Image (cartoon, rainbow, N blue to C red; front, side):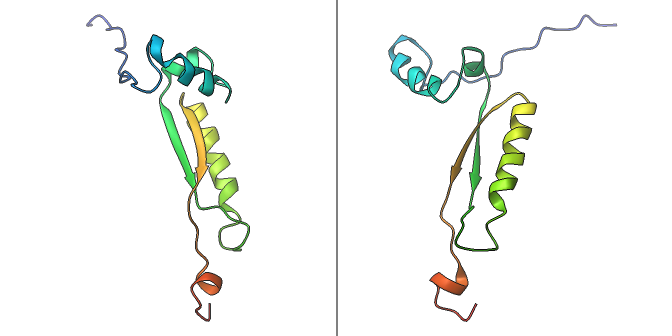
Length: 96
């Protein structure tokens, strides 16, 4: 049987927070809870159209939390943020 090869670090060097000059960037990320070990993890964006103004989107926050937990379980660092949501019945002037 072939000898098992050590796993290669496939992380791409970050131009955002790697290196001495990026210390302030890392300091900001540390304020979100990141540790030295977390900087080696892939950052994964969790985007949600969650909003309280539409009943069809209210549950999406919970789905975002499930996705966030799944990313953490898989060894990534999740970053949650929202995006624009539109209610056709209210914002678009349609009968709904």
